[in-house]
Amino acid sequence: MIQDTKNCLQGRSLTNFIDYSADEIRYLIELALKVKKQAQNKEIHQRFIGKSLALLFEKRSTRTRCAFETAFGEEGGHPVFLSSHDIQLGAKESVEDTARVLGRMFSGIQFRGFSQEHVETLAKYAGVPVYNGLTDSFHPTQVLADMMTLTEIYGDLKGLHLAFCGDGRNNVARSLMLISAKLGLDFTIVSPKEFFPDSEILSICTPIAKKNNANITISDKISLVKGADSIYTDVWISMGEEALSTEKKALLQSYQVNKDLMALTGKKDSVFMHCLPAVKGEEVTQDIIEGSQSRVWDQAENRKHTIKAILLATL
Image (cartoon, rainbow, N blue to C red):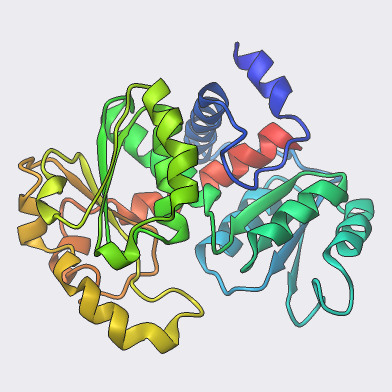
């Protein structure tokens, strides 16, 4: 089964997890756990010698850029960073033509930017694997690291309850909903009605969750975090939303993750998660993100291990 899954992933892009099976996602998590153990044992491998990776960044990044560069570079690969100042994706040169050119020069392409359509077009025309490092719609490499982190804590993921508090429309919330449905986690979004997720992502995830005996709940009632094994949040103001700052903060204030909200889970061992960067004092209080329930630094480290697993499985 493992070998068959590995063979199925060779040459595959990762723009989101819609076309990935639960077994394929679990394989990536198992591989990430393996490479993390190798790193802890200070094993040195050179599995990307002779390969190169284009890193296209329209949006700034700490974890995504560092994870891709270190995961690929320390294995002997050659990552090349290209910002929006270096190439004109979709402006002077079409996305299709950029994909064709980079596909002739690189073993794979990572894209972090605004448009989901751009990363999917790159994947269609490049002829090499393309990886979504974040778009406005999805953040698959983040949520794979989140599932790895939960696996380290709880073991079996099926039947866990993950609750997201905040803007339920954002890329992380949408991606968590999708991967939770695939892996059989119960997933709850508690959010102001103005920030409920769109009907399109719900129509995709609901039948997947039902097939895997999992539940998706969307509500403005904070009490529905009861029973959650993990409380997850993200920044209230995403890149490009600065003009909406005052309005969004007012609507989301009641959904701040603090000791009272964590207590509503009814579980002393419930953990706190955040994709980072965090604005301490807004979406989460200082005592929670720095406290014993926080797993945010494990999540951050696991970005590297899961990205290395994705690259090993697909290149």
